Length: 329
Image (cartoon, rainbow, N blue to C red):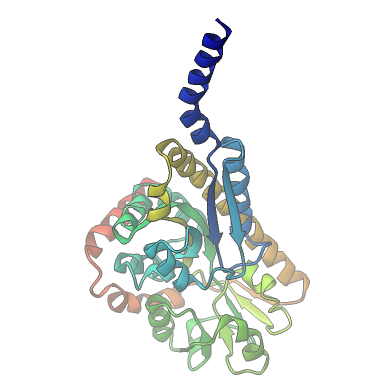
């Protein structure tokens, strides 16, 4: 009798074994970004890591690599599409070479404000761009903040004419290069790590950065003025490799998508906060803050639209939807 009871208990344990193994399975995800460990990206990803661990009882572990620990943004995009990088947050311009529709979001004066950009991108217009990513073996988890770009400079920039002939360091994005060409400046490619010295030695006269990046990049001693003409609202995106997504059990995928949206929203809120704090820190440091009338900048910058949108699929449909979304808000 005792032997039969022991045998039955053993069979029961064996029957439960696969479920127990599945429950205890651990998943690992590495996430990279190019900003510091004090940035909005890091805050959003820390939320993602903590919540994923919490909601899976420790079964999902996230390791965050800030400061380009997994490579620059173009390398992150390449790694995401090939499956060698699990996840990352990047600025939208870094997707332009891979997905031409993303060039639309580099159009100058596409949005009237950071708040408008956030609201519109969280709606159906923004979703259209996220829906493009799976074709390129990536999954968009959410829009992760908008960077309102200004012009840190070694001289006052009060009108578009003040930019004529100036060397301005901009990102290697066709949209940004075309925009600053239209403004009469000389867009100059310089690695971000060399930008401080380039400003200090007048290799370039100005650059294009959001307030928080002025502070985190320690540019306060290299600039004297910060102009805010509102040319670009640069969105960022939290992306996961489709290969990594598809490798997860269905229940874990659902948690990742839910927590990913939350983390993107956390990063967005933090980005708004650090930009406001950056403006205050610049004022306190004696940087001359300029809020020019954007009319002259807008007129010149929008001449770049045809060059930026050339060859972009369905651009008219995207812009029509954007117009409707802005009107509805």
